[in-house]
Amino acid sequence: MNLFRTKPANPAAFCDTGLKRCLGAFDLTFMGIGAIIGTGIFVLTGIAAAVYSGPAVIISFIFAGLASAFAALAYAELAASVGGSGSAYGYSYAAFGEIIAWMVGWDLILEYAVSVAAVANGWSGYFENALTAIGLGLPAALTKAPSMGGMINLPASLIILMLMVLLIIGVRESARVNVAMVFVKLLTITVFIAVAGFNVHPENWTPFIPFGWFEHGADGRPIGILAGASIVFFAYVGFDAVSTAVEESRNPQRDVPIGIIASLIICTLIYIVVSGLLTGVVSYTKLNVSSPVAYSLQILGYNWASALVATGVITGLTTVMLVLYYALTRIIFAMSRDGLLTSKLARVHPVRQTPVRIIVICGVVISLVAGLVPLGELAELVNIGTLAAFVLVSLGVIVLRLRQPDLPRPFKNPFGYTLPILGILSCGALMMFLPVVTWIRFLGWLAIGMVIYFAYSYRHSHLGAKPKA
Image (cartoon, rainbow, N blue to C red):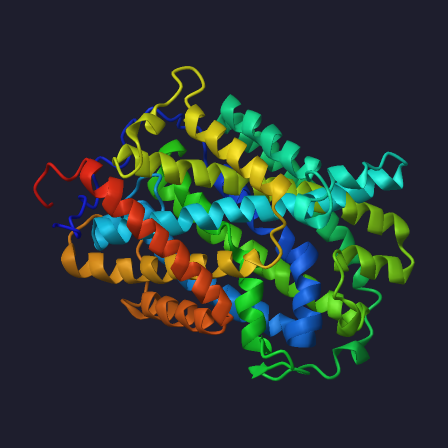
């Protein structure tokens, strides 16, 4: 069995594939910002400070940002040279072979689908709070999953279906909506920075490292700066979604690397500033709340700013869902086009120029999951899947440079193999700091993927009837 058959590294990657080429560097940068700035800054910052890192959550964000930066540079190089809408799946197909590519694609499906459903749950909570504030709160039965005593989390389900309609209409329209909403949440963050900057109490930064660099808490779970970095890494999930837009970019070899790198730099700086100010205006011990940014403004007495932040949270989480949902559909599109999933899914609507079948199926499934399943600790499962993909993408840069040194590389990582190796080591290290139960769930998902691959994908692969490239 030829489990490691590879695709050509550049199989007409930038030709017309039926998808609409309408995105520029500006659109792609805002797509990255739309995916990155959301739960991480509005929710996870406070939890990470209170439970894992204390004020040193700033260092946690720096560590996670560096690991993401190494991976982002690897993504940029492969997006410009290998191409295709499959992101890490496509790069693995060219570098390592089909079975590894399948496992990466299977991993990405979990990453994006669970991310969208989890963010929808968070979005529902903020939306319900906003409705309650104006006297239009929904019955509890319509805001909780059955296991939580309700019937369905209706807001979480409906927002997914609304985004489904938007993605069906077209990627150009979706990108315009994303840009508008990103401006709103950047305005929200600017207001917080402006207010908090004049209310910092340096004593709140003492002790700066209350939990050490890496220790185990009373319940046995990892705590400390490095454990915090492995948790806040969830905040950076999303920049890789930009690489799924290669086939809808006007000049992918130039614009996709710009979008990936620019969005990550902008968001990392924002995370560092916001986490520093947040722990400066309020003691880290008080930040284990659902909306720490809004909560800190309430403590300072700026209720109007707190209300504005709540609006920014709802808008911000909407853009995160939109971009991650989009990326999920393009990953499945690439896998079905290769025959690893049914090829019927790879049909593009002749008018909308979008993969409507995939969008609808994903929308319905995620809507049901978001409405019926509480997704408490699955952020960690998303983290380990993303880190695994980042490790393989960084390794893929090295493998393709060795195997195909003459492959055109419009963007190339500087300093030889140094940055890809740092990407492998840093992302691999962050994986080691995640709880054992997360590893068990992750390996269980991969085991299910292996069953599907040998039962269906291997026999239906379009590459199966061709000699190894």
